[in-house]
Amino acid sequence: MTDKKEIKEGPLSGIRVLELGTMVAGPVCGTLLADFGAEVIKVEPPGTGDPIRKSGPAVDGECLYWQVEGRNKESITLNLRTPEGQQILRDLVPHVDVVIENFKPGTMKKWGLDYECLAPLNSRLVMLSVSGFGQTGPYAERPSYDRIALAFAGFLNMSGYPDRPPIRPGTAVADYQSALFGAFGVMIALYFRDVKDGGGQHIDCSLYESIFRFTDIMAAAYDKLGVTRERSGNKHFAAAPGDHYETIDGRYLCLTVAATNVFRRLCGALGREELADDPKFLEHADRAAHYDEINTIVADWIKANPVDYVCAALEGHSIPHSLIFTIQDIFEDPHYEARQTIDTVEHPRLGKLRMQSSQPRLSGSPAITLKPAPDLGQQTNKVMKDWLDFDDEKLEQLKRNNTI
Image 1: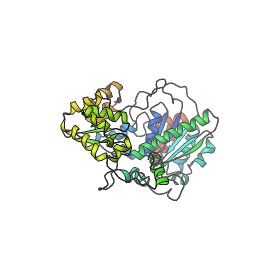
Image 2: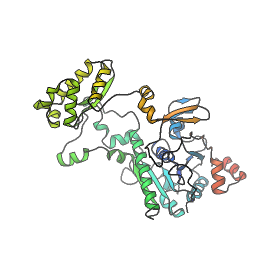
Image 3: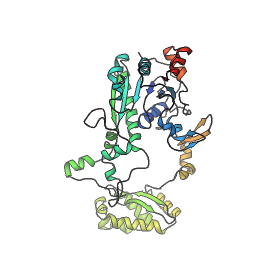
Image 4: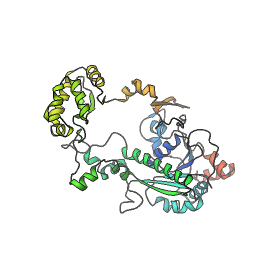
């Protein structure tokens, strides 16, 4: 039976998670839960740890990627490739609510650590498995990464310009989207278990399906109309005009208009009220049919006027728009500051470290104060002693065997 701790901090306090994943999708799911108070114990290989600890830029030997996605967690080391390490993992499972893993399908079964092996040890266990292609199907055991999932889901085929190769987004969208679906699945399963008395269950989350779910009408349009979505640059069927427009100083401004009443306001901002009554632009379907013409009118106006004037005119007429921000813009923007969208972690060696704040915002059960990412194996001795009653002699033996 899962241990229940007194709720002290965060709405998920009392929920214990063993996070076995590496790199992005599985670990970020753990981070999302940890941000709201779940006790997330990250299980890492002795000596090396999660590769994310050494991915990307570092400051004084401290990897920034790890600092962002390792926050609010505890770390233990355990060699899951050895029988002794596998048995210790089994011994830990009765003490937790959730296990997260994102190994290649079949790996956990080979180690005797899949859901079928662990569920008898804890009938209330919720286990999340994140993989590229899912746990079933002919491609289940194929290796995958974020970009592979974007390609397989059809996302890359519609990203970029028609006369150029497909373009990947600037961050790991499939990984992060799968982490969101994973955390959502965990919360559904916990609700089903605790409120509906439904017991534990296994969650199968794939990178490609997490992306495919959010490709709006791509599947339905092909099914009913035979339409294949292709790369169209910044054009979108639901936005005419809409684009990333170059400003007079060489920056870019994003603007999108769909509703006719918004278009009429845009005409006022441009000082071209007559355009609103032009038969070519009366309704969105008309504007979409004459996209290049109306888009050129907007582009020429933006390029010909000072940026401050353009933004003031658009804001004054309630037109959805934004300059395309750099991270410097973000750090200097008063809205980010007012909402504290950038939070600060007090790191023991780096000092104050700013990063994205926890999301979403809950009025009655907010996220916890950010805690720095742990050193590799920082809580190994504590967890092994508190949960499994290991003494110092046992711990030293495990270290000599490279089990922890």
